[in-house]
Image (cartoon, rainbow, N blue to C red; front, side, top):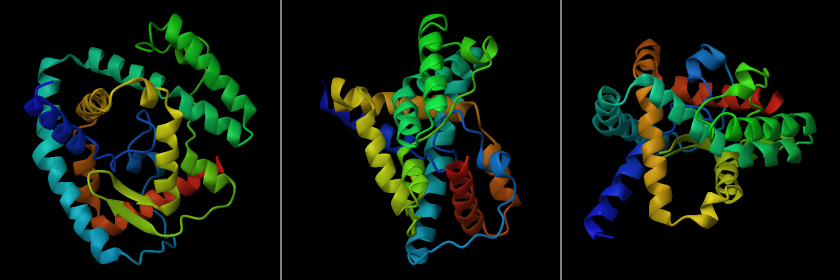
Length: 241
């Protein structure tokens, strides 16, 4: 493959991995809609100067790279197709949800996820539609390894913001790494295909949510504190559910 093309894919994939606007699942609602204004929570933040700098960096990357790309893409691809693609990517994330439901002893949730995957992968045409929800009223049971660690009483330890990735903590950073190895695609596809797919996924998802981040940022007195506390509150809620 042409080296310039590989380099371009790599750069796009990095910029498109600005996932701090969203929860773990690509179908999870935007932070502000998911939990409302963040309540007062105790967050261990010994890296605050670094975290603030990276938050500002990620913010610029969103406005200068991700948003313009997503807006251009939205003008070309109809919304109905973009929503179908979003559902397909969510369907592909089944192994992470299934395994972590089992690890948390949520066997009913694991069964629901298995049923959703079978139904949506067949009747739903590879997950481009969601008959499991529409016809059988089976809602996603979103679980990840960070939630599994929390389920077994591991605390967040400390807050950290990663370049291009966004807010996290030590527990969820370990969890994200484990989730990668839960996906069969990690072992079946070349790295550049995975990066390109991730880039496309982020562009498509962002095109469906343009304006939400801007609204939240505008409403926050201290954007950094808002995001930090909202992230911690959201993860506490997800672990408890």
